[in-house]
Amino acid sequence: MADKKDNGLLTVATNKKAYHEYFVNESFEAGIELFGTEVKSVRQGKINLKDAWCSIDNGEIYVNGMHISPYDHGNIFNRDPVRKRRLLMHKREINKLFAEVQQEGMTLIPLSAYFNRGRLKIQVGLCKGKHNYDKRATIAKRDADLEKRRAIKEFNH
Image (cartoon, rainbow, N blue to C red):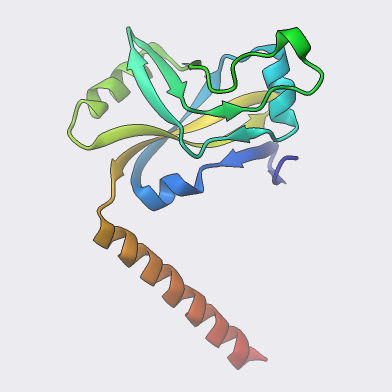
């Protein structure tokens, strides 16, 4: 099922791998074009953003590699689980993203999927790839913060 609900947003999936592999410079909200059985499957939490990425073709933005499992009761109406899906954004936003992606090392990665007032939205991040030493530094900082929180908690008890 869905993860959490806060201020009207129901988070269905997050892409934790994206935060490990990339620096997220900016994020955008986009709608997504789905068929009925896909929406029902997403409501059941059967969506995976792990290996997904976005591409811009002919002035339209698409998400590739996003896996939505077939709906159990969908029979002939089910679509291909990893088909290319169109994202819905304003033309000026797509043109801005296209200009940014032309820079070396920049890419578009779906960061999370959530329901906002009943409509599925995808948070798309404008990202730059991390090097191995950046990943190690991120892990070391996270571990140091964890140790610091544990020490504070132990001291207060």
